[in-house]
Length: 132
Length: 492
Image 1 (tube, rainbow over the protein chains, first blue to last red):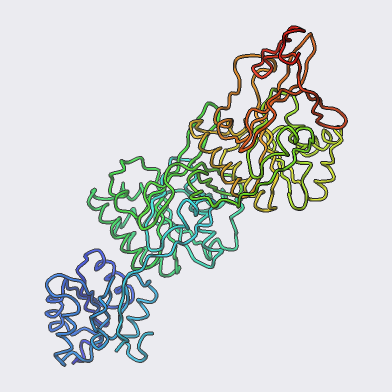
Image 2 (tube, chains in turn cyan, orange; image 1 turned 135 degrees about the vertical axis):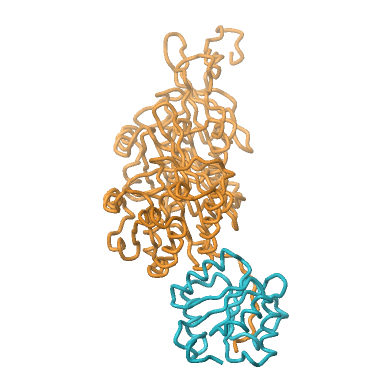
């Protein structure tokens, strides 16, 4: 999926988040860690950006307008083109009936802490051991 | 893929501030991932309180970042903290890191500060960030909207990064200003003047996500640091009564015990009222000198220290010295000067609980009136204190001063106490035929009858001696004593 040119650049993260303030802070954190970031404000935008940008990681919220995070990742996983792109879902709450374990590589409650967040992102992008 | 996660947010656990009394007011401490404003004028103690929390954090192994937005150097800041007991230099620069963001604010504005926090908070692994100088952020914001967005960004930062943020400000902006409406909590530090005395207080104006004790709580700043005294009547909650015992405690004066049907009722409150020098303290000492292993005693006084009390007791033949030496009686003495009533109550209750005190003698309840910032509160305060003591199974004897030595219409000036006392013993002087008599009368005794006559008593080498009933005399209790004619009087 990746070509030689994109491999030379810093890894790209697709950030799908409807809260503007949180999105701004996440961009700061990710850029400080050496990643490039492309933003989307909901699941529908996220699907569009995914096709255009070819990210190394998708970080998505669950609760969003238009298309929520669960529906977005279900669509992504149904289309096997992006099977090798890890997905990190972050949310303040996740309903019990949603089975996201087969769809995302990791789930973090919002407010887990910076260190865990950064470590998780690094591990997902670099591959190898999955985060605890 | 990960295990199927289900996630519901849970109520956050309080993080203790380590500041005495403050955690009681906040029902456990600050909440993590929250932004608080610490507001107060110059000299109200914002810097001391914030630093005290930082060093308490450090003692628990946590890191904090203290960011200044003022021109003051950290050297000066640290120098002023050196006398504080909480200041532990091993943590300064390691667990408590001081950095100035004054220049970043000047050159890069609020966005620069947010980026600085993102980088440095992580580098310092800070779970607590103090930003000293919120007003500087206000001043540097391009607009009210930009300032509001910054406060919102800080809240998001605290949540994502997982830290608690304290914003220090002396701003007197309206409570509807964005900083006050958007933050999770608002602690106000203030002070009131009463002629020559200044009273500090702390008030929680807002505290999202948790219960707290509202209203003003007196506070002090000493070399021990910042200390809050939660209002006694607000912290007590529902009291659990000690088991009622149909028991009497001796006053230490056998004849008086006979008059009140065997002694003072267990866990009751007795008020000894009388003018200066009449013998209130002596009667109180007699009561306390009946302390034992089963009934440890405590004297909490405002007029005489342990040394003077020993001498006085010795002259009256009371073995107070031996009881103190044997650990059966403890004496705590204060001069009634700059104390706060909640501070006094806290000390009494600590001493009672520490030794399981059952006999308590408070010599000079008037000192509570002097210590009261607001006299309207006094009745509720004394009522709560006596209720707590009752629940602890403590039998308490207070003394209260009558303003006039002989006669007079003033009566007891301390209505709040007399209404609460379950037992009242009035000691008065009576002048009859150019001679002063000491007299005693029982005005009130809980759930029991008592001898309604007026008695003469004396203070001698054997202590407090109750004598005969006053005969052919009237008006002693009202302070208008006079002899009845030899014939025709009720006792004749």
